[in-house]
Image (tube, rainbow, N blue to C red; front, side, top):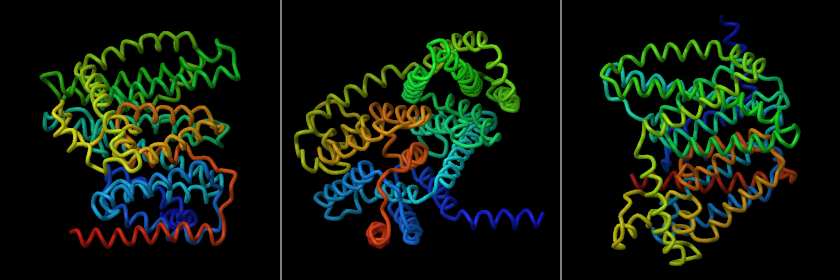
Length: 455
């Protein structure tokens, strides 16, 4: 036993950077939209690790727009509050640092980070399932699953991104698959169902369409549809089980009845790989289950009938916010100012801090330069040759941000960065690399001091 522990510690010491990136994801997931002190300490640690790195293979058309976005965000905050600490830039500056540190890793190390992030997604899903069951069976006060992120919509897209990242990790072309990862799929899908996040389901459907389009490039329509039906069949079974779990825990007089369903979900998880082999051997059954999956979608909508009205309200919000795009095109109206403007403009008050369209929100509060920088990074990712599952996950994330605010949840964007990252062609090394990490480190240190002063 002691020998195993020693071997594990030796292995961890040999992968300290990957371990720190993994811990960063855990922390970012649990701080929601961010906490200045926590993020500053985390960013400072990542920068210290980066200072000992020798080189990074970056894509300047992704890294530079991320840095530009944060610089403009901080200038916008300084214009309103007199300090860069009160705004999005100080918090989201962790993204370019995390990206740069990821690009310092070799291919095998990056694959390890991806697998660890998928394990984290599965662990968050499992924790959510247990949380929901406890609230339903013991306290009789279960509702939509917010999980570790504290918000059902953010938790939903976090799990969707994790699901597509899991597919990428299971792809034989990405290295020898780790068998234990396959068992995470039903856990992630059941937890996703408990969020009842319609935006996440729509984003997931968009990602599946991207998978279909990518499959069609190398196969006939029949072969492509067969592969997608196999994916949809598993998704239908996993999400369908989660929907039943939700209905039992929240819509019946015996909420403890969700316990047998949780046991059923555990049994399904144990037999998941056998199910996968069955669907591969019986493609017609996969098609049949996929068709019945439409009933799962209907059940999800019926379980949350307010979702249609909520979507209509978001469209109203976007239309209302368009008038503020031209107030200050250069730096925007300032971080956290849109809500105050919305409260006093005489129209419908939406009672939220973020416009439910990330690009529009960035354009309104931080200006057109910041908005264009984010758009440029997105376009660049699509111009890169990504594996199908990575492109599908990135598409799901982007679509969700057109109808929600997942970009502002640090853990969701960090999960997407790890899942979709791919080494660039430009090598940043020596003094330049250390200078970038050093400058970010100084900024995080200053913000950390300011966070103690504000307290």
